[in-house]
Amino acid sequence: MNTPSSHERIIIFDTTLRDGEQCPGATLNVDEKLAIARQLARLGVDVIEAGFAFASPGDFEAVQKIAQSVGTEDGPVICSLARAIRADIEAAAEALKPAAHSRIHTFISTSDIHLEYQLKKSRSEVLAIAEEMVAYAKSFVDDVEFSPMDAARSDPAFLYQVLERAIAAGAKTINIPDTVGYLTPSEFGDMIRGIRENVPNVEQAIISVHGHNDLGLAVACFLEAVKNGARQLECTINGIGERAGNAALEELVMALHVRRQYFNPFLGRSVDSEEPLTNINTQEIYKTSRLVSNLTGMLVQPNKAIVGSNAFAHESGIHQDGMLKNKQTYEIMDAQTIGLTSNQLVLGKHSGRNAFRTRLRDLGFDLSEQELNKAFVRFKELADKKKEVTDRDLEAIVNDEIQQAPELFRVELVQVSCGNNACPTATVTLRTPDGQELTDAATGTGPVDAVYKAINRVVNVPNQLIEFSVQSVTAGIDAIGEVTIRLRGRDQIFSGHAANTDIIVASAQAYVNALNRLFAAQHDPERTSYKQQAEVASVQS
Image (cartoon, one colour):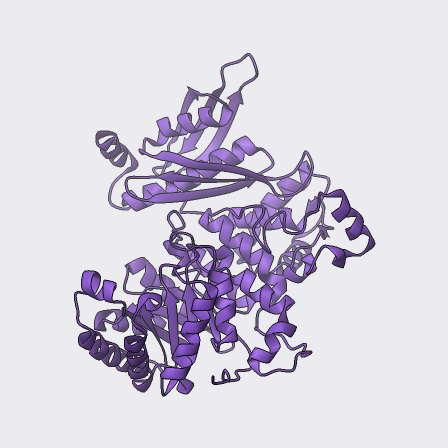
């Protein structure tokens, strides 16, 4: 068996903004994608797959803006996905032009089941297309990545042929995807080893892996791939993505960090080497996880590895006793390593804007003057209500204030009446896209249900609430409550998020946030008035 080629470290390829966004309900607007891309750059990812430029004008704009804003000379490589089709590759190349370092990632299926039922092409046709389209992508950018989709279920002999042709045509990275999350770790490792042993020109390219978590094995498969020569890992924050999601970036990075003595020899290093195996700034992991969770509406379950709220919690008496004596008795990593600290903001209601701005910069927020003004107002309001304002409180209000959907409807008033012997009743006032203030009231099974029914009477946009979640940002009776909801429109799922010390108000704001996304997707506010749109919605419902 050949020894894996020695690359100094593992390349982290983040596809949160492409594959991650394909998760139902996780659709992001351009500004939200840009916010995540900036945080991914702070996190230290090597490659950001910013989107699928040909898929829609919105995706094209997002790739282009990320290339311009984040794709700086000292920033990450900005990548766009493209089918092995000329129009896709041309769109990707055009969107990526502003980036200092750009990559086109082109793909075509290679499994017999995909060839027969999806592509309706022969193996010889796929061979020719792969070679031609990699060369075509190479005519636009020097950095080309090629993926044989559904590689895990492809005939190995044919897979080797396709990869050899793609590398010969100029692919610098060959990505091996388990598109349906089918393989076990040992099988994934065998596949990578087989590629290294049977593709003659494989040393001219970096081997990458991409995999889905349908059997809960994606991270394990990737780590086995590393042992067999894979040097790029394609992953997402919080493991979001289609179906059961992708391999989780934070789990991969921390596995390589905590167990680097185990993995060092597979990368040609001495066992005791302390050099990091990735370029990731681990102290940005927790913040990145929360940002992605807030903007996509995809909550992180408490028992999620690395970033779950229980990841560093201990309830067992035996565990607590051990932790008090020595943290290493029951923890293999320090919470501070991923940026999870108990630091509290020392600013108060009398603090000035300069101190506030400095603290935000320390937390990784680089706000415009307008964004700073909005965040500062929210901070002052919170400081009047809470004795202690923590960094997590600050992150929550800043994310809530500056990273929202287009403000079409706006909550002006929420008032509820409820109790154990009362009928829950809510009155709401919303400002409409036309600038009108409309008020309505409704009863419900509880105060939130009543608020939502009243909002629906005003907005009059058909929808179905499919998920409602409330989380406390910090401990204490005065804690900020974060509300995340997901609702279904005609054929799409939209998420909404809001944070407030009053969870009823946060619930209303999160619901309106999601309705604004739905409304924007179904209507064109610049062409018709709110009244006309409401009439159409009423007829359609």
